[in-house]
Length: 112
Length: 118
Image (cartoon, rainbow over all chains, first blue to last red; front, side):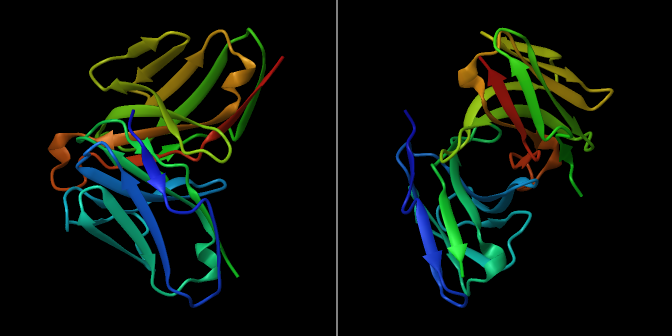
């Protein structure tokens, strides 16, 4: 079974803080993704990576950056958290394109 | 610009009856479609998929229908069970002909909350 884990289930941060969200997958998948889920908007792709040290912008990359130093780990960074980044953040991985993506449990981030 | 739309925010059905969840898309370059189910406090889990070369795919109680001319797909659940109560997302991806890194990106709909009453 593919397992995608995220470092925190719930996180509360202050406006202006730098925030790190970590994601690890254990199935040697090439591709990893970061989404945010908001009511009425579904899942929106922030960034994805198809190889170590490679990254591509998704549909809403503004205010975010990512890091992929190792194949199994993909980090999402909020350089200066803002209240409009309060959301559910979901990490996913997939073996190849196109194929089903396997999701982690999500991190509920609240920015005060 | 919402390229994948689920126009029904919610659906309520009785246990044992059919649930039909609908999804419309605007980009004719999409050629692979997926349905995901999401329970509260969990990540989405893959349910079923269909390639654009097919018009139907079936897996147990779940069947996905694709109408390319109408740019419409639907998920049928028969019979519906209370454990099916969840948020359902449809997603679409561009084919290899899209080129570059657009290939393989999933575009999701807004989701439909399904409630199955005992």
